Image 1 (tube, rainbow, N blue to C red):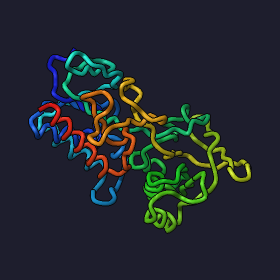
Image 2 (cartoon, rainbow, N blue to C red; image 1 turned 30 degrees about the vertical axis):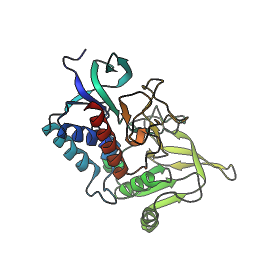
Image 3 (cartoon, rainbow, N blue to C red; image 1 turned 30 degrees about the horizontal axis):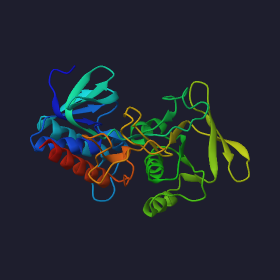
Image 4 (cartoon, one colour; image 1 turned 135 degrees about the horizontal axis):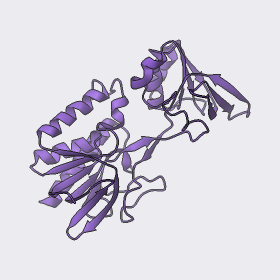
Length: 301
């Protein structure tokens, strides 16, 4: 058991989690921020932020981390495995520790969906990658493949186009769902090739990725695409499996909340990509985290 209880435990140290932790700490509450994988969350993969926020995702996350540290927010590594009532408190269990708090904000976010095809797991780190900014320089003057048709896929394709000789942008549909300015920018890049109505059936290679085995979803024809790197951006899966039954979720695992971001378990709130109804933008994550923190603070008072 942790030596000292906290007023609030925030699960997840992405933008939503750190925003909630920052607000609560500014209001004088003791806060513990638990992160299972990487402080900063998926935003650190974004090279250039769009809209109201400027700079890179890594810069935004780094600044928030320094701010919450200066405010006295404690940080802990660990994958949360359970949340349960313990009298008037909430017990949060990780793979190595148990903590108690008066309120919990779940901002555990989401992870990139996997293709689920042969070769993906065995070639992880050997050409199968998820961060274009991190791994792009490894593919100078090579051919890489990006799978997906949304904002993330096109953004990552543009990053990779700055390094690779050719980027094969593979999409199962006949048009992209990304924002128009990204579609226009991709169309203007001479080394991004759009491959329509196509899915990946297998990632081939012995010690490293060498090709994709693909299939056209319209006529069923199969073929191969030679490449040395594969980046899949086909959507997100919420990190919500650890939550108890009292916390209602959609069929896709997204957490259901009321307007104050409170879940079905009193004292437990949710915000960001783990929540059903999340708008998908960083500004939405910040807004939801602020609402959850405000509601948690009101409950604690």
